[in-house]
Length: 535
Image (cartoon, one colour):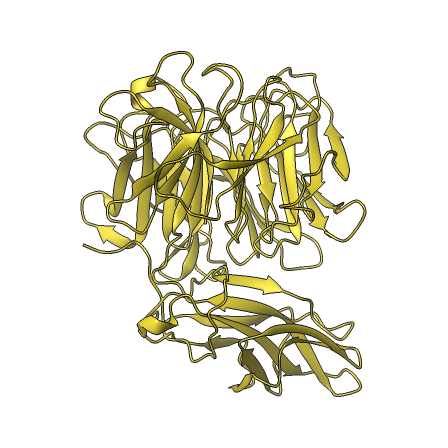
């Protein structure tokens, strides 16, 4: 039996500092040099023989070095910015003309939880030193190639009409995965309005942001989850952040997200009338935990967008926000640049007029790839699009690609995951019974099968599947929920490990029953899971 988490052999100086797998920070220097450093979607897990870092946005014609150290800094030097403490850093060669450098991680258990900070120095024709310095990355060595926790909002049907909404933590380090904590959110109303349609948790995992619903809970409630509780709990609420409009709480239609560092919160709201506007609000979280924001620092309204989904995704480096608007009166996706230090943090960078999403065929999900180079947009009607984000302007690589959806519906989820070291799109069919209901699309741009269906599979061939209203992935672990339908059918969470093939079902997977707010393993009716975050 295998633990869900994993890691590799990386010859880096490691410090026992909190990290977030591979997280970019800083900016290239000097002005004019655009080199960045990332892992191409790889997860740095103990014993991984294939982990690498790569240079993008620049070439390496002469050669360079990697600075690898235990301490991040930001020190300006004659137009350059050192992002790793050079006094404690190791220096590794980065030979020309390589732009990818293999850094296998040894299977040494003491490396788990350690972090290294890495920046590349590349020979480049820039004065005064003839070099360019890339942006940097923090690399945290994980025990396995998976997330450790899932944070779920739940609509409880086990105690009648007045059962409270809840938040629960799914432990992804156990086999099978199991819920380790559940508690009452304290929202007003009954089961029709007292649940959270989305829980958002930034990378540090200190706070959880629970989106309210309708007008009785027109706020985001903030909880302290830093103690990582086990069992039945009463979460410590820090208070509420007021939201400017009624929250249409059907799963996957309104959302909240944070930047990875927890500096900003993004919230969409608005009712379900087709001619009503949806609202995107941006809140600064700089004063947490001492005080909560009472008003947004920026608000953007989208006309005639109320009926369709208005959902979000934030790039892994926290510099971009993708907003999906599932209404024909709006472009399917807007791409914003994020500057947390600016008075209005969001600047519109591009509108993406994607094909295949017209009439009732709403796009319903949008995800950045783990390395931030691609944007994956999908709809339950069987269409998807892929956008390249590496150039000066977004480039649509696939416009109106198709996948074998068995139903036409906007209630659908997708994700971007890692399979065998390369990126794949994961699509969840919006149906509840029969046939393969997960589909993998090749997102490796150098592959001859780029954009094509790789495989389809199910997690429960005998009794059908959940209807996959929301999916999220981290590394090779994919988690999916059912957000609607008959109560008895909507109490499961699917956890799929793409690193473990299964000869019958495609991949090893687990179906985990959701808890009630008083019982982690209820014998009867439980709760319907809503949108969630993985950390």
